[in-house]
Length: 259
Ligand code: MG
Ligand code: MG
Image (tube, rainbow, N blue to C red):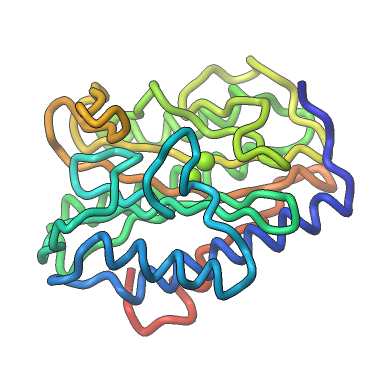
Protein backbone atom coordinates (compact mmCIF):
# COMPACT_ATOMS: atom_id res chain seq x y z
CA UNK A 1 0.00 0.00 0.00
CA UNK A 2 1.23 3.46 -0.88
CA UNK A 3 1.41 6.16 1.78
CA UNK A 4 2.57 9.71 0.87
CA UNK A 5 5.92 10.61 2.39
CA UNK A 6 6.12 13.36 5.00
CA UNK A 7 8.51 16.31 4.62
CA UNK A 8 10.78 14.68 7.20
CA UNK A 9 10.85 11.44 5.23
CA UNK A 10 11.50 13.32 1.98
CA UNK A 11 14.49 15.03 3.63
CA UNK A 12 15.93 11.65 4.68
CA UNK A 13 15.34 10.21 1.22
CA UNK A 14 17.09 13.25 -0.25
CA UNK A 15 20.13 12.62 1.96
CA UNK A 16 20.28 9.07 0.64
CA UNK A 17 19.73 10.21 -2.94
CA UNK A 18 22.60 12.70 -2.72
CA UNK A 19 24.90 10.08 -1.22
CA UNK A 20 24.09 7.64 -4.03
CA UNK A 21 24.62 10.40 -6.58
CA UNK A 22 28.06 11.16 -5.14
CA UNK A 23 28.91 7.46 -5.00
CA UNK A 24 28.05 7.10 -8.69
CA UNK A 25 30.43 9.98 -9.42
CA UNK A 26 33.22 8.24 -7.48
CA UNK A 27 32.61 5.10 -9.50
CA UNK A 28 32.61 7.16 -12.69
CA UNK A 29 36.05 8.54 -11.88
CA UNK A 30 37.33 4.98 -11.55
CA UNK A 31 35.86 3.70 -14.81
CA UNK A 32 38.65 3.16 -17.37
CA UNK A 33 40.08 0.47 -19.62
CA UNK A 34 42.04 -2.01 -17.50
CA UNK A 35 39.89 -1.65 -14.37
CA UNK A 36 37.88 -4.61 -13.03
CA UNK A 37 34.24 -4.28 -12.06
CA UNK A 38 35.24 -5.62 -8.64
CA UNK A 39 37.37 -2.51 -8.23
CA UNK A 40 34.33 -0.33 -9.00
CA UNK A 41 32.47 -2.21 -6.27
CA UNK A 42 35.31 -1.56 -3.83
CA UNK A 43 35.31 2.17 -4.61
CA UNK A 44 31.55 2.39 -4.07
CA UNK A 45 31.43 0.33 -0.89
CA UNK A 46 34.30 2.27 0.67
CA UNK A 47 32.68 5.62 -0.16
CA UNK A 48 29.28 4.58 1.17
CA UNK A 49 30.70 3.25 4.44
CA UNK A 50 33.02 6.26 4.86
CA UNK A 51 29.87 8.37 4.78
CA UNK A 52 28.26 6.38 7.59
CA UNK A 53 25.79 4.51 5.40
CA UNK A 54 25.28 0.88 4.48
CA UNK A 55 25.42 -0.46 0.90
CA UNK A 56 21.86 -1.77 0.80
CA UNK A 57 22.34 -4.13 -2.14
CA UNK A 58 24.90 -6.25 -0.26
CA UNK A 59 22.97 -9.27 0.99
CA UNK A 60 19.65 -8.05 -0.45
CA UNK A 61 17.87 -11.31 -1.31
CA UNK A 62 21.34 -12.82 -1.33
CA UNK A 63 22.99 -10.34 -3.75
CA UNK A 64 26.76 -10.73 -3.20
CA UNK A 65 28.05 -7.17 -3.70
CA UNK A 66 27.56 -3.49 -2.88
CA UNK A 67 26.75 -2.50 -6.45
CA UNK A 68 25.39 -4.06 -9.60
CA UNK A 69 27.99 -3.75 -12.36
CA UNK A 70 26.40 -4.71 -15.68
CA UNK A 71 28.68 -4.75 -18.72
CA UNK A 72 27.52 -4.44 -22.36
CA UNK A 73 24.72 -6.98 -22.96
CA UNK A 74 23.95 -7.27 -19.24
CA UNK A 75 20.87 -5.16 -18.62
CA UNK A 76 20.94 -5.14 -14.81
CA UNK A 77 22.03 -7.09 -11.71
CA UNK A 78 25.52 -7.98 -12.94
CA UNK A 79 27.91 -9.23 -10.27
CA UNK A 80 31.12 -7.23 -9.87
CA UNK A 81 33.87 -9.59 -10.98
CA UNK A 82 37.44 -9.95 -12.22
CA UNK A 83 36.27 -8.89 -15.68
CA UNK A 84 38.65 -6.23 -16.95
CA UNK A 85 36.88 -3.32 -18.66
CA UNK A 86 38.14 -2.59 -22.14
CA UNK A 87 37.92 0.36 -24.50
CA UNK A 88 34.48 0.50 -26.11
CA UNK A 89 32.64 -1.33 -23.31
CA UNK A 90 29.79 0.21 -21.37
CA UNK A 91 29.22 -0.50 -17.69
CA UNK A 92 26.04 0.24 -15.78
CA UNK A 93 26.53 0.89 -12.09
CA UNK A 94 23.41 0.56 -9.96
CA UNK A 95 23.91 1.59 -6.35
CA UNK A 96 21.79 1.55 -3.20
CA UNK A 97 22.29 3.07 0.23
CA UNK A 98 20.61 2.63 3.58
CA UNK A 99 21.09 5.67 5.80
CA UNK A 100 19.09 6.79 8.83
CA UNK A 101 16.53 4.09 8.11
CA UNK A 102 15.78 5.18 4.53
CA UNK A 103 16.97 4.07 1.10
CA UNK A 104 18.73 5.56 -1.89
CA UNK A 105 18.84 3.92 -5.34
CA UNK A 106 20.21 5.30 -8.62
CA UNK A 107 22.07 4.06 -11.67
CA UNK A 108 24.24 5.35 -14.51
CA UNK A 109 25.74 3.71 -17.58
CA UNK A 110 29.34 4.78 -18.19
CA UNK A 111 31.23 4.49 -21.46
CA UNK A 112 34.69 2.94 -21.08
CA UNK A 113 37.05 5.11 -23.12
CA UNK A 114 35.82 5.73 -26.65
CA UNK A 115 32.61 3.97 -27.65
CA UNK A 116 31.01 3.67 -31.07
CA UNK A 117 28.60 6.40 -32.19
CA UNK A 118 25.76 3.85 -31.99
CA UNK A 119 26.61 3.05 -28.37
CA UNK A 120 26.93 6.76 -27.56
CA UNK A 121 23.46 7.23 -28.97
CA UNK A 122 22.06 4.39 -26.84
CA UNK A 123 23.44 6.06 -23.71
CA UNK A 124 22.16 9.52 -24.68
CA UNK A 125 18.70 8.28 -25.64
CA UNK A 126 18.31 6.14 -22.53
CA UNK A 127 19.24 9.05 -20.26
CA UNK A 128 16.97 11.42 -22.20
CA UNK A 129 14.12 8.90 -21.92
CA UNK A 130 14.56 9.00 -18.14
CA UNK A 131 14.16 12.79 -18.19
CA UNK A 132 11.07 12.40 -20.39
CA UNK A 133 9.67 10.07 -17.74
CA UNK A 134 10.48 12.54 -14.98
CA UNK A 135 8.72 15.35 -16.88
CA UNK A 136 5.62 13.18 -17.02
CA UNK A 137 5.64 12.49 -13.26
CA UNK A 138 3.40 15.37 -12.23
CA UNK A 139 0.59 15.29 -9.66
CA UNK A 140 -2.66 14.28 -11.34
CA UNK A 141 -0.91 12.20 -14.00
CA UNK A 142 -0.75 8.42 -13.85
CA UNK A 143 1.97 5.81 -13.80
CA UNK A 144 1.14 4.94 -17.42
CA UNK A 145 2.03 8.48 -18.46
CA UNK A 146 5.60 7.93 -17.24
CA UNK A 147 5.92 4.64 -19.10
CA UNK A 148 4.42 6.11 -22.23
CA UNK A 149 6.88 9.03 -22.16
CA UNK A 150 9.89 6.73 -21.75
CA UNK A 151 8.76 4.17 -24.31
CA UNK A 152 7.62 6.53 -27.06
CA UNK A 153 10.90 8.47 -26.85
CA UNK A 154 13.21 5.43 -26.79
CA UNK A 155 11.34 3.61 -29.53
CA UNK A 156 11.39 6.66 -31.80
CA UNK A 157 15.15 6.01 -32.15
CA UNK A 158 14.63 2.34 -32.97
CA UNK A 159 15.66 1.14 -29.51
CA UNK A 160 13.52 -1.15 -27.37
CA UNK A 161 12.26 -1.14 -23.79
CA UNK A 162 12.86 -4.00 -21.38
CA UNK A 163 9.52 -4.95 -19.89
CA UNK A 164 10.45 -7.58 -17.34
CA UNK A 165 11.89 -5.02 -14.91
CA UNK A 166 10.56 -1.70 -13.72
CA UNK A 167 11.03 1.28 -11.41
CA UNK A 168 9.40 1.52 -8.00
CA UNK A 169 8.49 3.59 -5.00
CA UNK A 170 11.18 3.95 -2.33
CA UNK A 171 11.23 4.73 1.37
CA UNK A 172 12.06 2.59 4.38
CA UNK A 173 12.04 -0.27 1.90
CA UNK A 174 14.13 -0.17 -1.25
CA UNK A 175 11.20 -1.34 -3.35
CA UNK A 176 7.80 0.05 -2.47
CA UNK A 177 4.53 0.57 -4.33
CA UNK A 178 3.81 1.64 -6.97
CA UNK A 179 5.73 -0.21 -9.66
CA UNK A 180 6.88 2.13 -12.46
CA UNK A 181 7.04 0.32 -15.82
CA UNK A 182 9.03 1.87 -18.67
CA UNK A 183 6.21 1.29 -21.10
CA UNK A 184 2.55 2.07 -20.85
CA UNK A 185 -0.54 3.85 -21.96
CA UNK A 186 -1.34 7.46 -21.27
CA UNK A 187 -4.03 7.96 -18.63
CA UNK A 188 -3.68 4.42 -17.23
CA UNK A 189 -2.44 3.10 -13.91
CA UNK A 190 -2.05 4.50 -10.42
CA UNK A 191 -2.62 8.23 -9.94
CA UNK A 192 0.45 10.23 -9.02
CA UNK A 193 -0.04 12.22 -5.84
CA UNK A 194 1.92 14.68 -3.73
CA UNK A 195 4.50 13.00 -1.53
CA UNK A 196 5.06 10.04 -3.84
CA UNK A 197 8.77 9.19 -4.09
CA UNK A 198 9.63 7.16 -7.18
CA UNK A 199 12.68 5.59 -8.76
CA UNK A 200 12.30 5.92 -12.52
CA UNK A 201 14.77 3.66 -14.30
CA UNK A 202 14.56 2.96 -18.03
CA UNK A 203 16.44 -0.11 -19.25
CA UNK A 204 16.80 0.33 -23.01
CA UNK A 205 18.20 -2.19 -25.47
CA UNK A 206 20.05 -1.34 -28.67
CA UNK A 207 18.41 -4.32 -30.37
CA UNK A 208 15.28 -6.29 -29.54
CA UNK A 209 13.62 -6.13 -26.15
CA UNK A 210 14.02 -9.81 -25.27
CA UNK A 211 16.03 -10.71 -22.18
CA UNK A 212 16.96 -13.86 -20.28
CA UNK A 213 18.18 -14.64 -16.79
CA UNK A 214 21.77 -15.76 -16.34
CA UNK A 215 22.44 -19.15 -14.78
CA UNK A 216 23.65 -17.31 -11.67
CA UNK A 217 20.01 -16.35 -11.08
CA UNK A 218 20.70 -12.61 -11.10
CA UNK A 219 22.23 -11.06 -14.22
CA UNK A 220 19.71 -10.19 -16.93
CA UNK A 221 21.14 -10.38 -20.48
CA UNK A 222 19.75 -9.19 -23.79
CA UNK A 223 18.68 -12.18 -25.88
CA UNK A 224 20.46 -10.83 -28.95
CA UNK A 225 23.58 -9.90 -26.91
CA UNK A 226 23.45 -6.32 -28.10
CA UNK A 227 24.16 -3.56 -25.59
CA UNK A 228 21.69 -2.33 -22.99
CA UNK A 229 21.75 0.89 -20.97
CA UNK A 230 20.22 1.79 -17.61
CA UNK A 231 19.79 5.17 -15.97
CA UNK A 232 17.90 5.68 -12.70
CA UNK A 233 16.97 8.73 -10.65
CA UNK A 234 14.78 9.23 -7.59
CA UNK A 235 12.11 11.93 -7.73
CA UNK A 236 9.40 13.23 -5.42
CA UNK A 237 6.06 14.44 -6.70
CA UNK A 238 5.93 17.76 -4.94
CA UNK A 239 4.25 21.10 -5.62
CA UNK A 240 2.64 19.45 -8.62
CA UNK A 241 5.79 18.40 -10.43
CA UNK A 242 8.57 15.83 -10.17
CA UNK A 243 11.49 17.18 -8.19
CA UNK A 244 14.72 15.23 -8.50
CA UNK A 245 16.19 13.96 -5.26
CA UNK A 246 19.17 12.26 -6.88
CA UNK A 247 21.17 13.87 -9.67
CA UNK A 248 23.82 13.16 -12.29
CA UNK A 249 25.37 16.60 -11.73
CA UNK A 250 28.18 15.18 -9.60
CA UNK A 251 29.10 12.92 -12.51
CA UNK A 252 28.65 15.34 -15.36
CA UNK A 253 29.35 18.83 -14.04
CA UNK A 254 32.05 18.32 -11.41
CA UNK A 255 34.16 16.20 -13.68
CA UNK A 256 36.57 16.81 -16.51
CA UNK A 257 35.51 13.54 -18.00
CA UNK A 258 32.80 13.77 -20.61
CA UNK A 259 30.22 11.11 -20.00
MG1 MG B 1 18.76 0.82 -8.83
MG1 MG C 1 15.66 0.90 -8.53
